[in-house]
Image (cartoon, rainbow, N blue to C red; front, top):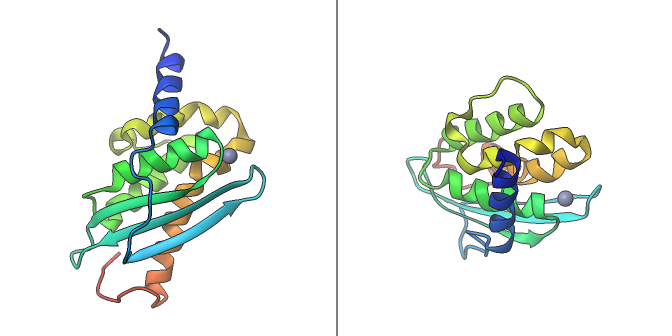
Length: 151
Ligand code: ZN
């Protein structure tokens, strides 16, 4: 089996069995985003403790296999990480898809989406959950969050 096939299976597995689907009752951070070019819709809820560590991350939405698989992988990857580490994962992933040098060490299964770099129109699908994450963190620095969490 080629690496491409392995990656495709990982993506389909996350799409068909999303790991962290749902909503939190009292999210510390939350953001919704829409990707009009593909029709993907996504809401990301995060529970962040006072140390700035992501204790829970869930998503809800509908869209193509790439956007949903990326959301499943990203919510999985950021659990237990600080907001700073989660942000680095998002940046490394974007670097990977923009074919810039990327720190792959923290990407985990997200690396399976590397092939999306070949389809520029789909990059927005793959990065939708990261953009929602950045939007949520931004709302914190703008005073929309609890104010106790360091990003
Ligand atoms: Zn899409």
